[in-house]
Length: 402
Image (cartoon, rainbow, N blue to C red):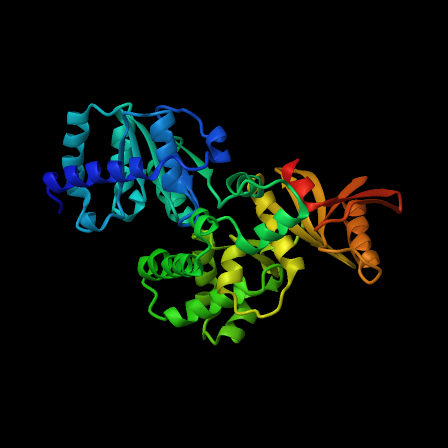
């Protein structure tokens, strides 16, 4: 339980703290956030990717009289459902008709309160760092009353804007190394990304799900982020990590994905069951986080570039697959039932890999009855025609800015 006096003080202090920070880089996601009433707007994303800054930008640019509250404040650790009545009184006294809530999902039965506020015609924006928790609770209590948007670390376009660079192969190289977590881009202190990973594993996963074997969770995470772009299965991971149960590995994988730390894409198949049982490719939320925390001591620029292109696609699409038959193609992008693009990624094309890359692409294009494919490289530009298929080769900076 939290007293109304403490709650009032926390709200005032948090607002002052936001105002002192400044507005920061205007995020591209701002353009996609609808101005809605009668719906809760949910912004979910990995921890420290800029969700609080996004709320502050909404506070400054759209809703200057909104009430902002971050429920992860240590002074609110005793907050429970009964304290929402005290919050109601503060809202009434302030005359606020817009509420901006950070990480409210840590409060039990929070969704009931949100439903009540929506019924009172209050506008609500909520941020959270757990995709499944938000969607599951909102799906049961706020059916048809919420819209969800995702926020990621800086995109390449945001990165070069923030660092005042031009689109080029050099800035792509820097982006691959640094990644897009705003505070790390600004300060370049490795401890920042060490703490981000630790916070996700401990606060977002271990504590929330009651995991006692934190060491196995850490070993699994380290393996995954050190092997981005590779195929994984729960059975194989069980043996590598030394966990006795495949179900335990499967649960850990779902927790890691819900926290946005890693993403998995299935092999394309028209059978959903086959998509579920085939090995999946793993990608990390940020190449900078991988570089700082990875156990790999080899420079694998190719997999870094592939991870970066995946994140670019993931910002726009949720249905992304890899293709594998005689050859392989990195990304098949689907919009509902239509294939939007066939994309291959290769850091540098040379005599040793050219045929392999083109064969994988042409096989995928033939399978989907498409005429054109796109091959992304670090710095090369070219055009190939093979078996009646046209394959455009673009340097990454041109593709990412298009």
